[in-house]
Structures are given as C-alpha cells and as structure tokens.
Length: 282
Image (cartoon, rainbow, N blue to C red; front, side, top):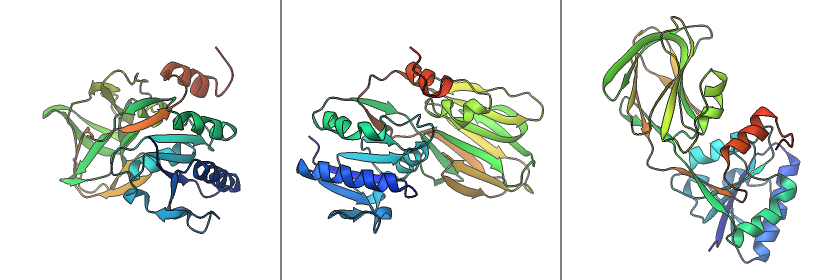
C-alpha cells in the first residue's frame, strides 16, 4: 500500500510547478503523505515537507520532466523505490504518461493497477572509489574536443584491445537506446542480460560495438598520462580522471524500478518514441 509519495521535478517550467500542486492536492485528498525534493523549496505553495531526495524514504517517487529528470532522480537514489514518471520533456523515452493523464494514472497506481519494470544499472569505480550508479551509460571521454584517448579494455581480466578513440561508452539495455545508439551501437532488448561497449569515433576501426554478459567486469585503463579525461554518468554527473586512471564497471546491486500502467513493451516504445516520434503507428 502506498502511504508516502516523494515528488521531484524540473524547475524551469511553470506548468511543472502547477502540476505538482495539483498532484499534491490529489494525494492529500487520499490521506497520502507527500514529501517534496528540497530543490523545490520556495517553488511550490503547498503545506508539505521538504527533504533531500537522497534521504527520502517513500513508497513511490513521482518525477515530472523528461528523461534527464528521470536520470538525475535515479542517480540520486540510495535505495530501491519505484519511480512513476510524467513526461514534461522532449522525447520522454523513459517516462510513462503525459501531464493530462497524470491524475487518472496515479489513481490506477494507488489501486494497484500497474506493472513493475526492473532496469539494471552499472556500478563504476575509479581507482577503487565508488561513483553513482548509471541507468543509461558510463562515458569515458577527453576533456579537450577532438583530442583522442588511448586506452586498454579488459573483460573479466582478459585484455580485449588497446584503442585510440574520442571516447568509450559502456551502456545498459536501457541506455542502448540513447547515446550508445547514436554512436553506432545496437539496441538491446532488456530481457537480454547484457550491456554494450561502444567506441566513439575509433581511430583504427579495430573495435566495433561489443555486447558482453551483464555479470562481466569491464576494466578501462587510460594509457597516455598527458591526456586529460572525464568520466560522465548518464550525462548528469562528471568526474575528472587522474592520469593512468583505472575504471572498473560492473552490474549494480540496486536496479531502478519503474511503475508502468501500460503493458511493458520495449518494441512499442521504440516504435512510437524513437522511430516515429509519437505518431500513432500500430
């Protein structure tokens, strides 16, 4: 039973703030406690508590925004909590409903009329330091545009290849429809327990996108000490990499759980939101 709901949102749209207020009024009418992400403090005119999302303990998190809002929310979560996402972005591949559907959809959720979609994440470690998990991808790239990185890739301790490229992506099935797809990778059905390694503009064309088991340990070693590099998680979190950094990427122990009131159908989502961009093609 859902008794506590946390809400987080993009802050740059008046429509988003108005929708939050409508949702708060609806949930409070159902005697549900509402907690707002502290970043919404002074934005919403309602009698509710505010708390950092990282500290929130709730039965459900409602996000209002696009895929960026979903990714930011997932990156800040420290424990499993189902996410119900309302699209107020551009593509909204990860979101579930449009704003005009939100109250009716929430009623279905409160009545238990939904499915849970479990999405695996990646756990990156730099020189032994744990970083936030990635729902979409981990990107290793140069700080300087058009400056090649020289790196070595190992899979489960075995050397795969040394390569020079603009960067390297390690993506989940969820992330295979995002940056990795634009970089030439394949879409992975989430039922396939794997992730994909995709080079970005490799110099020698020796490394093509490679699908590896989800339980693999992918190690990336930077070989050129003079190159300044970055590690970017889901396009949201950025970390400077020291010279000769060693990055290990494994499956996270904490997946992201999405509330779906529509049947979980990855091919329908690809068809409507990637191939035809919202057209009603059946």
